[in-house]
Image (cartoon, rainbow, N blue to C red; front, side, top):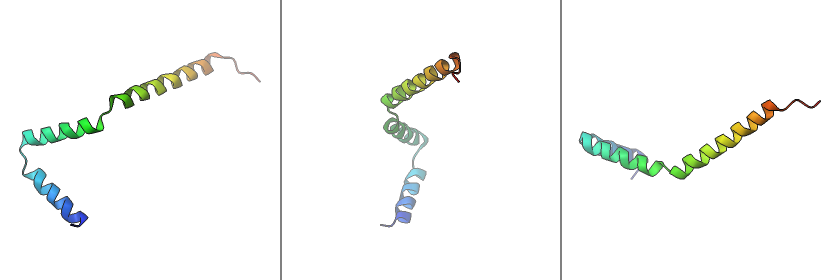
Length: 63
């Protein structure tokens, strides 16, 4: 089966779905993509970066 044929089959399946089925599918896909540990890791890196920026702005330049 070629890529184009696979894409067409997926599109036909999506078109035949009801609104509630489509919402369920989207919720399922979002669940696969969402990873709470990634959010926490991102927030930790961001907080660390902000602390470094604050510290750099507070210190006097040493020339």
